[in-house]
Amino acid sequence: MIPRRALALLGLALAACEGGNGGGSPAGPAGPGAPGVVPKIEGCDVFPADNPWNRDVSRDPVDPRSDAYIASIGASRFLHPDFGSDPGYGIPWTTVPLTQPRVPMSFDYADESDPGPYPFPPDAPIEAGGDRHVLVLDRDNCRLYETFDSHFVGPGWRCGSGAVFDLRSNALRPDGWTSADAAGLPILPGLARLEEARSGEIRHALRFTARRTQRAYVHPATHFASSDRDPDLPPMGLRVRLKASYDVARFRGAARVILEALRKHGMFLADNGSDWFITGETNRAWDDEDLNQLKSVPGSAFEVVQLGEIRR
Image 1 (tube, helix red, strand yellow):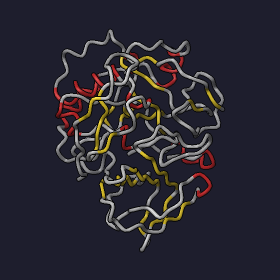
Image 2 (cartoon, helix red, strand yellow):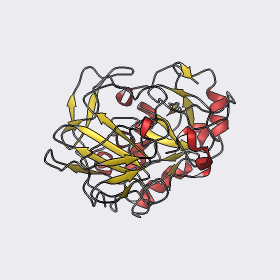
Image 3 (cartoon, one colour):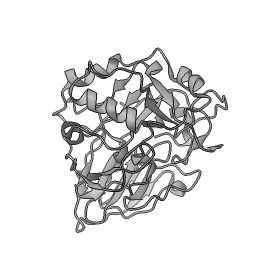
Image 4 (cartoon, helix red, strand yellow):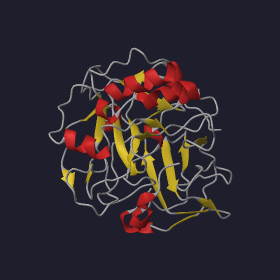
């Protein structure tokens, strides 16, 4: 995560977790633009059916600047799974019950962070690499707690920033606020999770990174992480989808499931990092040979879903 006051970190790239419940509950009519089946994690619906993360955008209009945005990210560069069986990759997460003790939190960017206490156990898994995200789901209250640059200092945690999301609500962060992610978005709802992939369907958008971004954001993002005003650069919250014309018949396993999700739900630009790096959970059970198929998908296979108001 790179708050706009820490632009010196723009060059940083995103470098055994508990699995979620891959099931879902009916939530209205299926079809493009309509809510379908809401994803679940540990019994919690992950946002309401009409939340942007759960929208079918397969037939939404293409943004007029799509070609320029894709070119800036890299039409000839390739998708890259930034996760796999190596625990040094991906983002770990954990769940806790209602009874988990709340501990004090301190934040470097306190004015854009939700104050503690948070239900963080002292051994909560920390993402490997520089971002050091911690993601904790209170499964009884369906509240998600996420932090960036996280360090346990006993009895609480010292972090760069922190955000709390009520998974039963469509509420966004305040405009101009970061989260544990540069774009002000939640992280866990956008991860590719193994149990979902094995179920044969990922029912939500995913998240990805780009090296250069615009000093702008579009909802559901609420924060930018750049000083560059080039209109051809992608704003945070930009949503891309796999083109309907791209043939996925040659892909198998989790890679095929992920590509189908990218065709239907797309993925949000959530952070500065390596171009076209897509994020999943840390899990030793991922099949790396399977995931490596994604590395053959070029940026030109994607298009930008028409954006809403670009906020600067």
